[in-house]
Length: 357
Image (cartoon, rainbow, N blue to C red; front, side, top):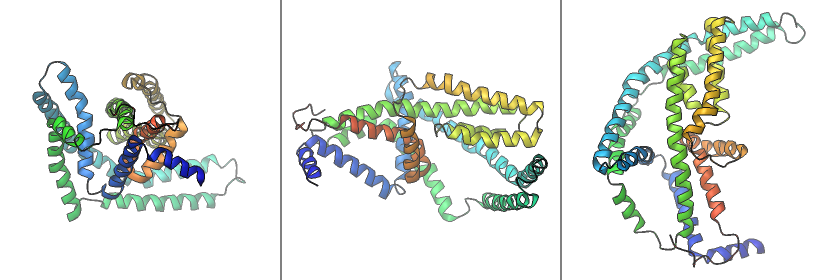
Protein backbone atom coordinates (compact mmCIF):
# COMPACT_ATOMS: atom_id res chain seq x y z
CA UNK A 1 0.00 0.00 0.00
CA UNK A 2 2.88 2.35 0.81
CA UNK A 3 4.32 1.72 -2.64
CA UNK A 4 1.03 2.74 -4.29
CA UNK A 5 0.79 5.82 -2.06
CA UNK A 6 4.31 6.93 -2.98
CA UNK A 7 3.61 6.29 -6.66
CA UNK A 8 0.43 8.38 -6.54
CA UNK A 9 2.16 11.27 -4.73
CA UNK A 10 5.05 11.19 -7.17
CA UNK A 11 2.94 11.64 -10.27
CA UNK A 12 -0.09 13.53 -8.98
CA UNK A 13 2.12 16.59 -8.47
CA UNK A 14 2.92 16.72 -12.20
CA UNK A 15 0.29 18.71 -14.17
CA UNK A 16 1.15 16.96 -17.44
CA UNK A 17 0.59 13.50 -15.99
CA UNK A 18 -2.62 14.66 -14.31
CA UNK A 19 -3.94 16.13 -17.56
CA UNK A 20 -3.15 12.96 -19.54
CA UNK A 21 -4.82 10.77 -16.92
CA UNK A 22 -7.94 12.94 -16.70
CA UNK A 23 -8.19 13.16 -20.50
CA UNK A 24 -8.02 9.37 -20.86
CA UNK A 25 -10.57 8.79 -18.09
CA UNK A 26 -13.01 11.34 -19.53
CA UNK A 27 -12.59 10.00 -23.05
CA UNK A 28 -13.27 6.39 -22.13
CA UNK A 29 -16.11 7.40 -19.78
CA UNK A 30 -17.85 9.40 -22.52
CA UNK A 31 -17.58 6.52 -24.99
CA UNK A 32 -18.78 3.93 -22.49
CA UNK A 33 -21.71 5.95 -21.13
CA UNK A 34 -22.74 8.10 -24.09
CA UNK A 35 -21.45 5.96 -26.94
CA UNK A 36 -24.89 4.97 -28.20
CA UNK A 37 -26.26 8.51 -28.16
CA UNK A 38 -23.13 9.97 -29.75
CA UNK A 39 -22.71 7.13 -32.26
CA UNK A 40 -23.52 9.33 -35.32
CA UNK A 41 -21.04 11.97 -34.13
CA UNK A 42 -18.30 9.43 -33.39
CA UNK A 43 -18.88 7.64 -36.70
CA UNK A 44 -18.79 10.98 -38.54
CA UNK A 45 -15.48 11.85 -36.88
CA UNK A 46 -14.06 8.53 -38.04
CA UNK A 47 -15.27 9.07 -41.61
CA UNK A 48 -13.97 12.65 -41.66
CA UNK A 49 -10.61 11.42 -40.36
CA UNK A 50 -10.46 8.87 -43.18
CA UNK A 51 -11.33 11.48 -45.80
CA UNK A 52 -8.88 14.03 -44.40
CA UNK A 53 -6.02 12.11 -45.98
CA UNK A 54 -7.50 12.66 -49.46
CA UNK A 55 -8.17 16.33 -48.71
CA UNK A 56 -4.58 16.80 -47.53
CA UNK A 57 -3.33 15.06 -50.68
CA UNK A 58 -5.22 17.53 -52.88
CA UNK A 59 -3.96 20.43 -50.78
CA UNK A 60 -0.39 19.30 -51.37
CA UNK A 61 -1.13 19.81 -55.06
CA UNK A 62 -2.02 23.47 -54.35
CA UNK A 63 -5.79 22.96 -54.15
CA UNK A 64 -7.61 25.39 -51.81
CA UNK A 65 -9.15 23.54 -48.89
CA UNK A 66 -12.82 24.19 -49.69
CA UNK A 67 -12.69 22.87 -53.30
CA UNK A 68 -10.64 19.90 -52.08
CA UNK A 69 -13.24 19.16 -49.41
CA UNK A 70 -16.08 19.42 -51.94
CA UNK A 71 -14.38 17.07 -54.42
CA UNK A 72 -13.63 14.45 -51.76
CA UNK A 73 -17.07 14.78 -50.19
CA UNK A 74 -18.91 14.34 -53.50
CA UNK A 75 -16.77 11.30 -54.37
CA UNK A 76 -17.47 9.81 -50.94
CA UNK A 77 -21.23 10.45 -51.31
CA UNK A 78 -21.27 8.68 -54.67
CA UNK A 79 -19.39 5.73 -53.17
CA UNK A 80 -21.89 5.46 -50.29
CA UNK A 81 -24.81 5.64 -52.74
CA UNK A 82 -23.25 2.84 -54.81
CA UNK A 83 -22.83 0.65 -51.73
CA UNK A 84 -26.34 1.32 -50.36
CA UNK A 85 -28.33 1.04 -53.57
CA UNK A 86 -26.11 -1.12 -55.77
CA UNK A 87 -24.18 -3.60 -53.66
CA UNK A 88 -26.19 -4.06 -50.45
CA UNK A 89 -29.38 -5.27 -52.22
CA UNK A 90 -27.28 -7.88 -54.03
CA UNK A 91 -25.62 -8.95 -50.78
CA UNK A 92 -29.01 -9.15 -49.05
CA UNK A 93 -30.41 -11.32 -51.83
CA UNK A 94 -27.41 -13.67 -51.69
CA UNK A 95 -27.71 -13.96 -47.90
CA UNK A 96 -31.34 -15.05 -48.32
CA UNK A 97 -30.41 -17.58 -51.00
CA UNK A 98 -27.56 -18.98 -48.91
CA UNK A 99 -29.78 -19.37 -45.85
CA UNK A 100 -32.34 -21.24 -47.94
CA UNK A 101 -29.62 -23.60 -49.20
CA UNK A 102 -28.21 -24.38 -45.75
CA UNK A 103 -30.40 -27.46 -45.10
CA UNK A 104 -29.25 -29.02 -48.39
CA UNK A 105 -25.62 -28.21 -47.56
CA UNK A 106 -25.95 -29.84 -44.15
CA UNK A 107 -27.53 -32.91 -45.74
CA UNK A 108 -24.67 -33.21 -48.22
CA UNK A 109 -22.17 -32.86 -45.40
CA UNK A 110 -23.92 -35.57 -43.41
CA UNK A 111 -23.84 -37.92 -46.41
CA UNK A 112 -20.13 -37.31 -46.94
CA UNK A 113 -19.38 -37.84 -43.27
CA UNK A 114 -21.32 -41.09 -43.20
CA UNK A 115 -19.42 -42.38 -46.20
CA UNK A 116 -16.08 -41.35 -44.72
CA UNK A 117 -16.75 -43.13 -41.41
CA UNK A 118 -17.98 -46.39 -42.89
CA UNK A 119 -14.42 -47.69 -42.59
CA UNK A 120 -14.33 -46.78 -38.87
CA UNK A 121 -17.62 -48.02 -37.38
CA UNK A 122 -16.18 -48.17 -33.86
CA UNK A 123 -15.06 -44.54 -33.90
CA UNK A 124 -18.52 -42.96 -34.05
CA UNK A 125 -21.92 -44.48 -34.69
CA UNK A 126 -24.39 -43.53 -37.38
CA UNK A 127 -26.90 -42.53 -34.71
CA UNK A 128 -24.41 -40.12 -33.16
CA UNK A 129 -23.79 -38.53 -36.55
CA UNK A 130 -27.52 -38.18 -37.14
CA UNK A 131 -28.02 -36.61 -33.72
CA UNK A 132 -25.13 -34.19 -34.34
CA UNK A 133 -26.42 -33.19 -37.75
CA UNK A 134 -29.95 -32.88 -36.41
CA UNK A 135 -28.81 -30.45 -33.73
CA UNK A 136 -26.74 -28.53 -36.28
CA UNK A 137 -29.69 -28.37 -38.66
CA UNK A 138 -32.01 -27.11 -35.94
CA UNK A 139 -29.60 -24.39 -34.83
CA UNK A 140 -28.85 -23.36 -38.41
CA UNK A 141 -32.52 -23.15 -39.34
CA UNK A 142 -33.14 -21.05 -36.22
CA UNK A 143 -30.42 -18.58 -37.18
CA UNK A 144 -31.57 -18.61 -40.78
CA UNK A 145 -35.14 -17.85 -39.83
CA UNK A 146 -34.00 -14.86 -37.79
CA UNK A 147 -31.96 -13.61 -40.75
CA UNK A 148 -34.87 -13.97 -43.14
CA UNK A 149 -37.35 -12.27 -40.84
CA UNK A 150 -35.00 -9.44 -39.85
CA UNK A 151 -36.04 -6.12 -41.30
CA UNK A 152 -36.01 -2.41 -40.68
CA UNK A 153 -39.77 -2.30 -40.34
CA UNK A 154 -39.71 -1.15 -36.74
CA UNK A 155 -40.16 2.53 -36.04
CA UNK A 156 -36.92 2.68 -34.08
CA UNK A 157 -35.00 1.09 -36.94
CA UNK A 158 -36.39 3.52 -39.49
CA UNK A 159 -35.68 6.54 -37.28
CA UNK A 160 -32.14 5.37 -36.61
CA UNK A 161 -31.52 4.82 -40.31
CA UNK A 162 -32.86 8.27 -41.15
CA UNK A 163 -30.65 9.86 -38.49
CA UNK A 164 -27.57 8.21 -39.93
CA UNK A 165 -28.49 8.98 -43.55
CA UNK A 166 -29.29 12.64 -42.90
CA UNK A 167 -27.22 13.67 -39.90
CA UNK A 168 -23.97 11.88 -40.66
CA UNK A 169 -23.37 13.43 -44.11
CA UNK A 170 -23.88 16.90 -42.63
CA UNK A 171 -21.51 16.19 -39.74
CA UNK A 172 -18.84 14.76 -42.03
CA UNK A 173 -19.01 17.82 -44.28
CA UNK A 174 -18.67 20.30 -41.44
CA UNK A 175 -15.93 18.30 -39.73
CA UNK A 176 -13.95 18.47 -42.98
CA UNK A 177 -14.80 22.06 -43.89
CA UNK A 178 -14.26 23.58 -40.42
CA UNK A 179 -11.49 21.30 -39.18
CA UNK A 180 -9.15 24.11 -38.12
CA UNK A 181 -11.97 26.10 -36.53
CA UNK A 182 -13.16 23.12 -34.47
CA UNK A 183 -9.66 22.13 -33.37
CA UNK A 184 -8.85 25.74 -32.49
CA UNK A 185 -11.97 26.05 -30.36
CA UNK A 186 -11.21 22.77 -28.62
CA UNK A 187 -7.57 23.55 -27.84
CA UNK A 188 -8.50 26.89 -26.25
CA UNK A 189 -9.88 24.98 -23.28
CA UNK A 190 -6.87 22.73 -22.82
CA UNK A 191 -4.20 23.53 -20.20
CA UNK A 192 -0.78 24.76 -21.26
CA UNK A 193 1.06 21.92 -19.58
CA UNK A 194 0.19 19.01 -21.86
CA UNK A 195 3.56 17.92 -23.19
CA UNK A 196 3.07 14.23 -22.43
CA UNK A 197 -0.45 14.24 -23.87
CA UNK A 198 0.90 15.96 -26.98
CA UNK A 199 3.59 13.32 -27.50
CA UNK A 200 1.07 10.54 -26.94
CA UNK A 201 -1.35 12.08 -29.45
CA UNK A 202 1.42 12.58 -32.02
CA UNK A 203 2.35 8.89 -31.81
CA UNK A 204 -1.26 7.70 -31.88
CA UNK A 205 -2.15 10.02 -34.76
CA UNK A 206 0.81 8.72 -36.77
CA UNK A 207 -0.19 5.12 -36.17
CA UNK A 208 -3.92 5.67 -36.71
CA UNK A 209 -3.45 7.64 -39.92
CA UNK A 210 -1.29 4.82 -41.24
CA UNK A 211 -3.37 1.93 -39.93
CA UNK A 212 -7.00 3.02 -40.34
CA UNK A 213 -6.65 4.54 -43.79
CA UNK A 214 -4.48 1.64 -44.93
CA UNK A 215 -6.97 -0.87 -43.52
CA UNK A 216 -9.85 0.88 -45.29
CA UNK A 217 -8.10 0.61 -48.66
CA UNK A 218 -7.08 -2.98 -47.91
CA UNK A 219 -10.74 -3.92 -47.33
CA UNK A 220 -11.81 -2.35 -50.64
CA UNK A 221 -8.97 -3.90 -52.65
CA UNK A 222 -9.32 -7.37 -51.13
CA UNK A 223 -13.09 -7.22 -51.61
CA UNK A 224 -12.83 -6.14 -55.26
CA UNK A 225 -10.08 -8.60 -56.25
CA UNK A 226 -11.78 -11.55 -54.55
CA UNK A 227 -15.12 -10.63 -56.14
CA UNK A 228 -13.51 -10.50 -59.60
CA UNK A 229 -11.87 -13.91 -58.96
CA UNK A 230 -15.03 -15.55 -57.59
CA UNK A 231 -17.16 -14.13 -60.41
CA UNK A 232 -14.64 -15.28 -63.02
CA UNK A 233 -14.74 -18.82 -61.58
CA UNK A 234 -18.56 -18.55 -61.36
CA UNK A 235 -18.68 -19.26 -57.63
CA UNK A 236 -22.12 -18.89 -56.09
CA UNK A 237 -22.70 -15.96 -53.73
CA UNK A 238 -19.58 -14.23 -55.09
CA UNK A 239 -20.48 -10.78 -53.78
CA UNK A 240 -21.39 -12.00 -50.30
CA UNK A 241 -18.30 -14.18 -49.91
CA UNK A 242 -15.92 -11.54 -51.27
CA UNK A 243 -17.41 -8.99 -48.86
CA UNK A 244 -16.76 -11.39 -45.98
CA UNK A 245 -13.19 -11.88 -47.16
CA UNK A 246 -12.70 -8.11 -47.36
CA UNK A 247 -14.06 -7.55 -43.86
CA UNK A 248 -11.98 -10.43 -42.51
CA UNK A 249 -8.80 -8.34 -42.78
CA UNK A 250 -10.08 -6.24 -39.86
CA UNK A 251 -9.26 -9.07 -37.44
CA UNK A 252 -5.57 -9.99 -37.80
CA UNK A 253 -4.61 -13.69 -37.76
CA UNK A 254 -8.18 -14.81 -37.06
CA UNK A 255 -10.39 -13.25 -39.73
CA UNK A 256 -8.79 -14.95 -42.73
CA UNK A 257 -8.90 -18.37 -41.05
CA UNK A 258 -12.57 -18.03 -40.11
CA UNK A 259 -13.82 -16.77 -43.47
CA UNK A 260 -11.95 -19.49 -45.37
CA UNK A 261 -14.43 -22.06 -44.04
CA UNK A 262 -17.59 -20.68 -45.74
CA UNK A 263 -15.70 -19.97 -48.96
CA UNK A 264 -14.45 -23.56 -49.28
CA UNK A 265 -17.75 -25.05 -48.08
CA UNK A 266 -19.76 -23.15 -50.70
CA UNK A 267 -17.23 -24.16 -53.37
CA UNK A 268 -17.37 -27.81 -52.31
CA UNK A 269 -21.17 -27.85 -52.23
CA UNK A 270 -21.25 -26.32 -55.71
CA UNK A 271 -18.54 -28.42 -57.40
CA UNK A 272 -17.54 -31.28 -55.09
CA UNK A 273 -13.94 -32.51 -55.17
CA UNK A 274 -13.50 -31.53 -58.81
CA UNK A 275 -11.02 -29.38 -60.73
CA UNK A 276 -13.19 -26.28 -60.28
CA UNK A 277 -12.88 -26.64 -56.50
CA UNK A 278 -9.10 -26.99 -56.84
CA UNK A 279 -8.88 -23.89 -59.05
CA UNK A 280 -10.88 -21.90 -56.51
CA UNK A 281 -8.79 -23.13 -53.58
CA UNK A 282 -5.52 -22.31 -55.35
CA UNK A 283 -6.71 -18.87 -56.47
CA UNK A 284 -8.01 -18.03 -53.01
CA UNK A 285 -4.75 -19.14 -51.39
CA UNK A 286 -2.72 -17.05 -53.83
CA UNK A 287 -4.83 -13.98 -53.02
CA UNK A 288 -4.31 -14.52 -49.29
CA UNK A 289 -0.55 -14.77 -49.80
CA UNK A 290 -0.48 -11.65 -52.00
CA UNK A 291 -2.50 -9.72 -49.42
CA UNK A 292 -0.17 -10.60 -46.57
CA UNK A 293 3.13 -10.30 -48.43
CA UNK A 294 2.53 -7.61 -51.06
CA UNK A 295 -0.54 -5.48 -50.37
CA UNK A 296 -0.05 -5.00 -46.63
CA UNK A 297 3.60 -3.83 -46.94
CA UNK A 298 2.58 -1.41 -49.70
CA UNK A 299 -0.36 0.09 -47.81
CA UNK A 300 1.19 0.21 -44.35
CA UNK A 301 4.32 2.29 -44.65
CA UNK A 302 4.98 1.94 -40.93
CA UNK A 303 4.51 -1.40 -39.19
CA UNK A 304 2.57 -1.26 -35.94
CA UNK A 305 5.09 -2.47 -33.36
CA UNK A 306 2.80 -4.75 -31.37
CA UNK A 307 3.28 -8.39 -30.45
CA UNK A 308 0.68 -10.79 -31.96
CA UNK A 309 -0.47 -11.71 -28.45
CA UNK A 310 -1.10 -8.02 -27.69
CA UNK A 311 -3.10 -7.66 -30.92
CA UNK A 312 -5.29 -10.69 -30.15
CA UNK A 313 -5.91 -9.48 -26.58
CA UNK A 314 -6.80 -6.01 -27.90
CA UNK A 315 -9.28 -7.50 -30.39
CA UNK A 316 -10.95 -9.55 -27.64
CA UNK A 317 -11.09 -6.71 -25.08
CA UNK A 318 -12.13 -3.79 -27.27
CA UNK A 319 -14.37 -5.96 -29.44
CA UNK A 320 -16.18 -7.07 -26.29
CA UNK A 321 -16.60 -3.46 -25.21
CA UNK A 322 -17.63 -1.79 -28.47
CA UNK A 323 -18.48 -4.54 -30.94
CA UNK A 324 -17.53 -3.94 -34.58
CA UNK A 325 -15.90 -0.57 -33.99
CA UNK A 326 -13.95 -2.00 -31.08
CA UNK A 327 -12.59 -4.73 -33.35
CA UNK A 328 -11.83 -2.24 -36.13
CA UNK A 329 -9.96 0.10 -33.79
CA UNK A 330 -8.41 -2.61 -31.63
CA UNK A 331 -4.90 -2.04 -32.96
CA UNK A 332 -5.05 1.80 -32.79
CA UNK A 333 -6.42 1.55 -29.24
CA UNK A 334 -3.66 -0.88 -28.33
CA UNK A 335 -1.24 1.60 -29.85
CA UNK A 336 -2.74 4.29 -27.60
CA UNK A 337 -2.04 2.11 -24.56
CA UNK A 338 1.51 1.48 -25.78
CA UNK A 339 2.08 5.20 -26.46
CA UNK A 340 0.88 6.11 -22.94
CA UNK A 341 3.19 3.50 -21.42
CA UNK A 342 6.11 4.77 -23.51
CA UNK A 343 5.53 8.45 -22.69
CA UNK A 344 4.81 7.87 -19.02
CA UNK A 345 7.70 9.17 -16.88
CA UNK A 346 9.84 6.54 -15.21
CA UNK A 347 12.45 8.54 -13.34
CA UNK A 348 10.01 9.92 -10.76
CA UNK A 349 11.05 13.52 -11.36
CA UNK A 350 8.56 16.30 -11.78
CA UNK A 351 7.92 16.91 -15.47
CA UNK A 352 6.42 20.37 -15.21
CA UNK A 353 9.66 21.76 -16.58
CA UNK A 354 9.29 19.82 -19.82
CA UNK A 355 7.97 21.62 -22.90
CA UNK A 356 4.23 21.97 -22.60
CA UNK A 357 3.58 21.15 -26.29
